[in-house]
Length: 440
Ligand code: ASP
Ligand code: MG
Image (tube, rainbow, N blue to C red; front, side, top):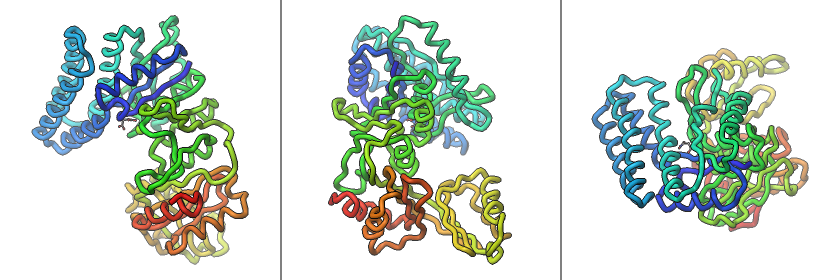
């Protein structure tokens, strides 16, 4: 059995949904199909939820009506018989009525999760309606019945496996299952989600839970590329990556795959394929335990990074200093990405600055603290790159004229990262594209 996940743009127009139905019926292998919300919907729902949080019901109502209008146009082209149109209309009515009821209830965090869940509920139900019109046999599996997270918002893979296996057993002769990405239930039993872009994570958790033959992530680009196609002119798709390489790339900025989605696949050794709905026969990128070759495969950048430097004479010859520094970040549940040290100072970077004020206040106990905002981490990722004597010199040669704030090398054999100002990021990606890949 395999898992196929389709993102919002692959479902963004009725015609694209028709294409998806062809892809999921193209072969006879049993499959679980995981769908995101139709593109733009989750953003619209976030806006509605934010408006309600501010108490602006009038604008929220306008946004709900506008979204509903879009969906009416959508279903008109999605299905063609009067009977199916009526069914699709009922689906819209149910979910938009729900949003209109929420409008009148006082806002809470839990309610906002309910609002955000409507996108995936709508896309799967509408897709199912279309499949029914086409006479494609399938089962709609409610993600809220098996996808669960614990008190720390971590997915409960054991529980997911038990529940999902039960659901599949109840439908023993079925070949095609459709379910929602992104949404889940939390430890309190409430509707919750796996954070923005979390449908990839759902797909990989499902693939791990059922020991799938493959986890296919269908988007609108031919797999992962060696550089960011939005920034540099020429990029090439990467044929194969190891899980470690893919994790580094996804974490450090390659937008195509949610970074958390790597570990379930890696732990249960499920090959992940990144494929293109617009060009289904293109090879895309295969991610598995082995790397195809040595050397640099790609560069990626992550924006909005804050660098924190703690300078302290107490650090000199002291042990336990770094532990104390790290404890501050632990206390505020803020992950650190890069670290560099000298004898009297340590620099770290974070991407979540929600607790920056508190962290700074507590760090000031140790010495002077300097903050640089709007930095970017540029990562050079590949297999055994740190083992190759020439890679580092090539990287530095490519970075001519750039003010590098931090360098991280040797932490893993697959990554060299540099910190530069956000303003220099594009230039750095361009210079690395020519310096490392010979692409101009
Ligand atoms: N619909 C959700 C989002 O836009 C989840 C996803 O698309 O992966 O974040
Ligand atoms: Mg996505």
